[in-house]
Length: 313
Image (tube, rainbow, N blue to C red; front, side, top):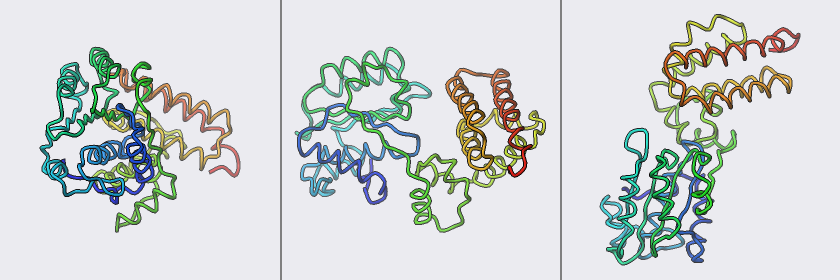
């Protein structure tokens, strides 16, 4: 992997500095769980920490970039680093067996061994059980850096054996300032809310060809819900999107700010969104279309009183 530079990810500096200090004090756990929303830079933080753990001559709590270990890392062929990620939609037991085999024996560069696992929440039952065995008896000199956007999907026994490190979303103004410093063009207002405080997600959206399409879609949905227009024309489009929960979360945030919903209506909408997010991965085919229609219809009904009252807009 290329050497990641901390200055490119300023919101990670505080987390990295604290982890670096723990390492210098020999208090860094051998199994770390880096959690947070997609687009927060969990993998990048794992890369920064990997470089530090493997460096032969760390300086000021960071990798030096010049030693043999850093050069091997920059070339993408460090023998004491293993990167694992799901094959398809799940992380299987074969990948975890690779992890176990990798931990055996001494490091080739006579330092640490580091394993980075992406999307840890996608482990199968067998994979989770295999990983648990390694966590129960961590090999000396090995560090496991587990990355996840859904820590709640992991077994409690795995969570209890990791030093947990959560990366919180940026506050709206902090994210807006970061985007303004990184992006020379105009930035639509919806980007900050839609990205949920995740800088990498926001930048990816700004640089994609879906930027204008998404802006239009959100405006259409807002109109559809507030004016109680027929849902059917939008269902096919929504059914095919992979960011549907983000879209619904953005709409709820928008309504909570602009529609000035009463607490009961807002709470009901939040509960229906939680149920939808929980069940989305198991809803397929026509059932998914029905589920989308159900939540949007419910929201239309809840928004009706707010729309009808004078002064609400």
